[in-house]
Image (cartoon, rainbow, N blue to C red; front, side):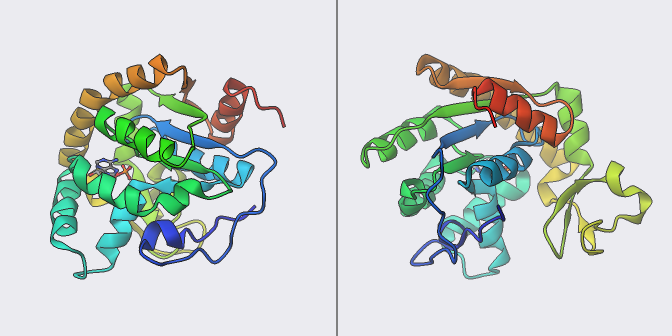
Length: 244
Ligand code: AMP
């Protein structure tokens, strides 16, 4: 299954996705938890293909706003400054953006929320939002990796400026050229060492309470994030007791 364009999520407003999901065999509504760099985005893509659900990343949403250059509201411009430093964007701004995109949460194809919620306040707000539409989460999948491996993954992460494929410098060597399309690889502003430190601190402060929140609701599933993406996907499916 190919990736959908996610217009409704990335552009908001009255934007529509070009391709609507076919009725999936199993509709999933998951949140993915874990530190930046743990591989949530990669797993979200793989799970999205597996289940036909949409990968809804709040980080992608902010990057899409940034790419619009200049036309962002005052609240959004302030949000982008938080992002640049590696800090969390205020809950109010994030929640307003997600609430505007309730159509994506109600979508018949299901969803994989990546990078949201990041605080207990966001998790509570998400529950209220979903309950208002008679929806509920199926699981909160938490990806776990030791800190030194996370930092190494983040510092070596590169994104292709052309096709947006994410890779690691270990895979491309000195060339720093995308293996997919030959495009120029760039480092995310917030993957620089000074921002990584801020992001890891923000993550550590929020992670425990957030995991406890989902644990208390019997939704938490922890998955070790070591190894190749396909192995982590298989581990995720096994943990969810889904057999292909
Ligand atoms: P990500 O791509 O998920 O690592 O997100 C990149 C950046 O976007 C984060 O470091 C935050 O600055 C901001 N961001 C994304 N999602 C959230 C969220 N749920 N709450 C607060 N800030 C967020």
